[in-house]
Length: 88
Figure 1 (cartoon, rainbow, N blue to C red):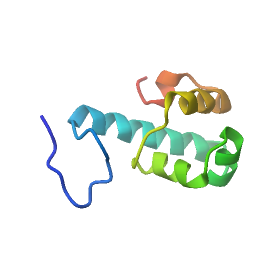
Figure 2: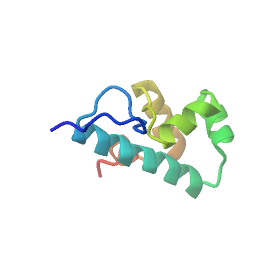
Figure 3: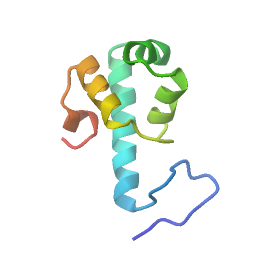
């Protein structure tokens, strides 16, 4: 089952429903963890070595972090990768 392509879609690449749900869970979890820690996007970006726009893209579901950044986020937030990605 595939989603129809719409002009307001902010997902790139995979439009499969499972991919959309995964990206949404991961996006919300990254933002949730950052807000719980009460840090800005800028502070998180500096801590893991990415541009602040990258954090915004992740949180808004525009794209998702590469494995190396998932590892950095897991270490920074002291959570499991499954938790970070919304799998548990």
